[in-house]
Amino acid sequence: MIKNNYPWKNKLSDDECCESIPIINVKDLNLSYGKHKAFEDISLNINRGCVTGIIGPSGCGKSSFVHCLNRMIELYPNSNVDGDIYFNGKSIFDSRVSLMDLRKSIGVVFQEPTPLPLSVVTNIELPLKEHRFDNVKERAIQALKDVGLWEEVKDKLHTPANNLSGGQKQRLCIARTIALEPEVILMDEPCSSLDPISTEKIESLIHNLKGRYTILIVTHNLAQARRICDYVYAFWYDEFEGSGKILESGTCSDVFEHSKNQIIRDYVGGLKG
Image 1 (cartoon, rainbow, N blue to C red):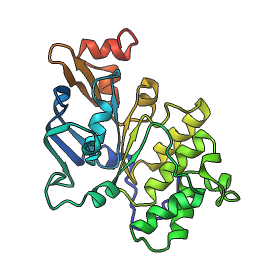
Image 2: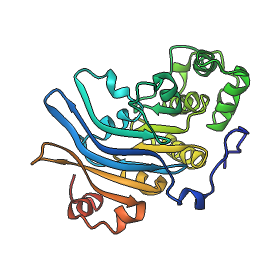
Image 3: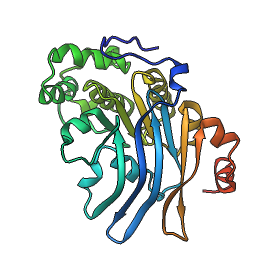
């Protein structure tokens, strides 16, 4: 278990994680790109301190949905969002919301590791300086320790981050995210380009970060979702409506073992999708 070295971060116990305290509420959310509907009528809660998984086949709007949660979707041409998203009880679309603050509070880890073309330590120190944190060096080292990377890179801090392995790059990106003290971490297929050993390290890291952070992960890997998720939302592409929908939701056990939806039972059983 990762030691909580941040006095301002209180890790929730497993029991508290199961109390279903929402930190993000999504209500009647629709997204389209021009005339193409990515998804519609998405309503869900993301519970504080838990790991929530978004599963489903390609093309049903999973990644697009995640990019709505900190308004990164607005960077996509012709995107149009309708509905509302509440973070800590406040609409993220309120005109008074600072996008910089929102994206610091709701960080993103992408599918492909995206280190800056700079040194290992600068990858973490630069965003800390941009957000005017104090004790930058101390925070950067602590973040590297929290993702289990410190012992591997402590003699390579000033070498290019792109010299790291794929798994190390992804853990560096996670370290860069948590150094900014987010409340929520969005992970969009963070292990899809990694080997099994690196994937195991990321999954172990997610388990250890749970409670200190709220984590939402998009994954095509159903076994991975079973291993690490507390709650799961199963997206599907509705051919009749021409858009993504939620077909099933609940605890990991609800979706994988007790689903009432035949499509999702077939999907998690390997018969469909």
